[in-house]
Amino acid sequence: MQRISLNAKTEGKSIGLVPTMGFLHEGHLSLIRKSKKTTDITVVSIFVNPSQFAPNEDLSKYPRDFKRDKKLLAVENIDFIFHPSAEEMYPENYRTYVTVNDITAKLEGEFRPTHFKGVTTVVSMLFNAVKPDRAFFGQKDAQQAAVIRQMVRDLKFNIKIDVCPIIREPDGLALSSRNIFLSPLERQDALVLNRSLKLASKLIKEGEFETRKILKGMAKIINSVQCSNPDYISIVDAESFDKISKLKRGNNYYILIACKIGTTRLIDNIHIRVR
Ligand code: AMP
Image 1 (cartoon, protein in one colour):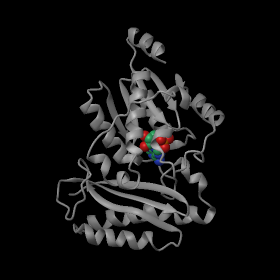
Image 2 (image 1 turned 45 degrees about the vertical axis):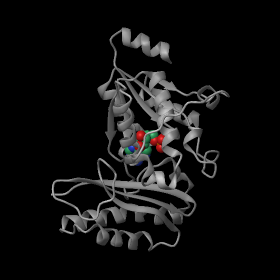
Image 3 (image 1 turned 60 degrees about the vertical axis):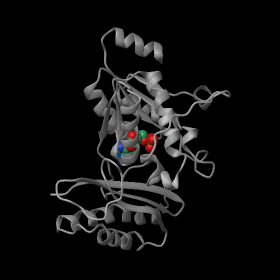
């Protein structure tokens, strides 16, 4: 991979990287299309990264179908798939981890304390392997994108980070590789995530700036279905990811939800600029 990238660079070509864990959907494809539009060569990495899953999480269950992914990527006409094995990425004597402080302790970090360390470590390895000029991430994982931005700033990676909008099903459910685990009833119930985000957006437009009240309305929707079990429903500053009690005009926020629907953990969010 490094040889290919160095050759491309000597030819003056720019490289775009789209890191994924495979089982591709239109969300991933939207990042790939953005990369194709803005760089000369697009590399899609497919790697289910063991170090970002805690022992009690769904690493072994995580959906994988490389043949199907390859077909989808052939249609998109990308240049390279980088598909390393876990043994190549983490050989027996592997000892090095990248950690970003503060922002990684909040929200996702509270419920998945080792998750971001795995993400920043693998993304650093991917950056060193692929040597991209630009890397494309989804707002679907808004906190992850913020963590990566922080890491790139702090470690002086010469890479532009692009964060692309969330792609949704027509009924509002954010696309996710994990949606495949939802039963038909859970698939219906999973709409409470998007529905509660929409309520928050409506309340804010109507002038409700007390986050306590907005979160109460959201929780009511989330808890209206039996199989939901929220980890967090939060309104945070879009830069620091600190929780906010009162919104201010002109500021940017994320409203974020992590919620189990049955046994499937889903996340969703919206970005809000208060006018
Ligand atoms: P994953 O394969 O889940 O690790 O996701 C790979 C990349 O695709 C991450 O940057 C995600 O944020 C992004 N992504 C996942 N789902 C969506 C979606 N529904 N819309 C846009 N981007 C997404």
